[in-house]
Image (cartoon, rainbow, N blue to C red):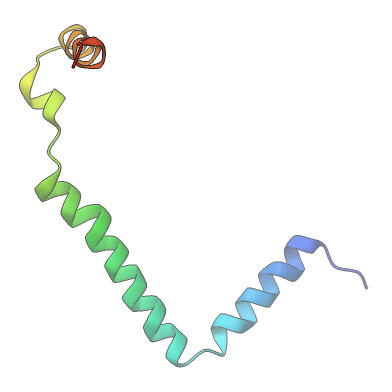
Length: 72
C-alpha cells in the first residue's frame, strides 16, 4: 500500500522522536533557550517604544516616516 508523502514524513519523524533518549533532553534544552530568547528577552529588553510614547496611529506613523526620511 502506497502512503501519502506527508504520512511517510510524519511517521519518520514520529518514530525517530519516540525512540530518542538523549535527544529528548537536547530538544528540551533547545525549547527552553528559544523560550528565553523570544519571550523573556522581548519583555525586558525590547519595550514597545511606539505604543508607550505616542497616543494614536497617526502620531506613530508620522514619527516612523520622519525617522526613515531624515537625512543623516
